[in-house]
Image 1 (tube, each protein chain N blue to C red):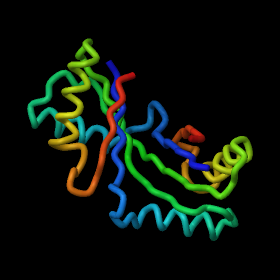
Image 2: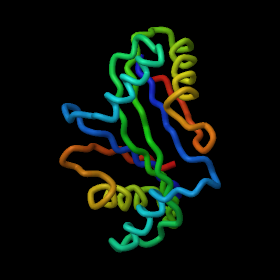
Image 3: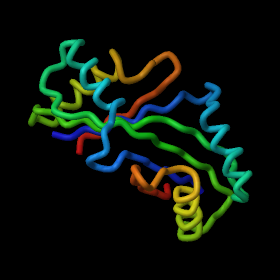
Amino acid sequence: MRAKVTVMLKNGVLDPQGEAVKSALGALGFAGVDAVRQGKVIELDLAETDAAAAEATVRDMCEKLLANTVIESYGVEIL
Amino acid sequence: MRAKVTVMLKNGVLDPQGEAVKSALGALGFAGVDAVRQGKVIELDLAETDAAAAEATVRDMCEKLLANTVIESYGVEIL
């Protein structure tokens, strides 16, 4: 079973990576970029074959390791 | 228009971040994790209102800045 986790900074948390990308795009001549947010994506190959159990395990992984839930939100997709 | 870019290392390229996450998950007691790959996700808010034009612009941004196409592949989603 394959799972995809997306971790983004919560709204209101300063995102210096996103700001850097935005200003670099401007410097390269790309106009009309209003905002940029950068996060991470983690793809996991799991031995688990039940989708519901896999999702529960991956959410547990997010709470314990993959996301800092004070400042980050995460989404889990089972593929 | 909002666009979401996902950048992952190409298959065959060593992914030390993914390996580190995999071994940390093992140390936390999560068994059955066969492989982990880590990439980045970039969300862009664009002034452009035409979806096809927005996608073309974002692909151009990926080629020029957001992805290192020697070792990374990217996907563009217009939301």
